Image (cartoon, rainbow, N blue to C red; front, side):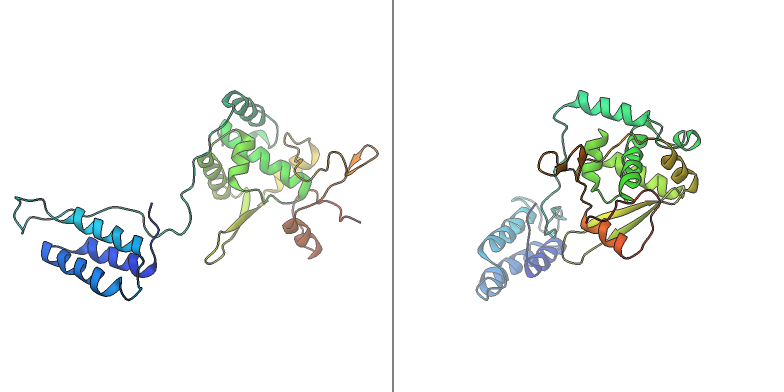
Length: 245
């Protein structure tokens, strides 16, 4: 993937929409005689566009009126390509998925609507909401803890929202990486179920195992998102952490 500036991306679209060798030659001349000397594009972008023009030109021996193929490249993204995560221990991931998927984290009638991997994902969500009042974990972390892939997390969230079991609040930021989604349980039956029973997923991300322990109790610290919502008086299903002294 090549990341281009706005001016270079516009020139790339023009190169890709050209229909004859004459148009491509004119564009190549304009790139080196006008755009590059004026500083609209840098050296790497000019070289990339020149190579793109050469790739689009018909081969020797072909008629000039023959159609020329278009190039297909991702050039507009400003972020790095997402790397597909790989589990370092597939056996352990499978065991976690089976354990969480077979747990009683939701009523039996609701569990029958999801696959084993999706139930493992929702068990993570239920455990976070039971202990923190809301789930704001990134999808990649939910997938790692549940022993599934990111696509399974997205499918589980989409299906649970479609059935009206959860509400997802998206937090986009223009020009920057989006904040994680806020997930709440809207099903009264599910909320009552997780309040009465134990959670298969017990979050430990905010435990201080050594220095933070006082006696036999671990000191908890909620994330800024959760503690802010708590101070504003917003109520979420499940148990909220007590505000630290």
